[in-house]
Length: 126
Image (tube, rainbow, N blue to C red):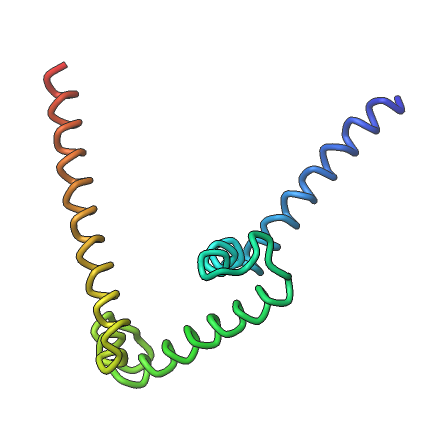
């Protein structure tokens, strides 16, 4: 009977670990991306946790402030893409990067749609 208790006890601890991992990932959602970005800008491959904490706080604060401003610019309590464009229009680097990312996103959507159409055609024939 002790073996069964250990077996069932281990299942619950695995679930608890998964829950804590998911909450940890949500808490530090940007950490992995920031880690690679910081490394790309010349830091160590394994940067200090405090460095990542500070950079993450700065990024999240910027996003929060930008979203709050965007809610005030356009329709009340709604964020539209045009509002973000309006807010970053004076920063040429950010504005051009947003335009590039949006155009790439549109190209990817079109490519996926074409791919899905081709797949659908293949399945209809077969």
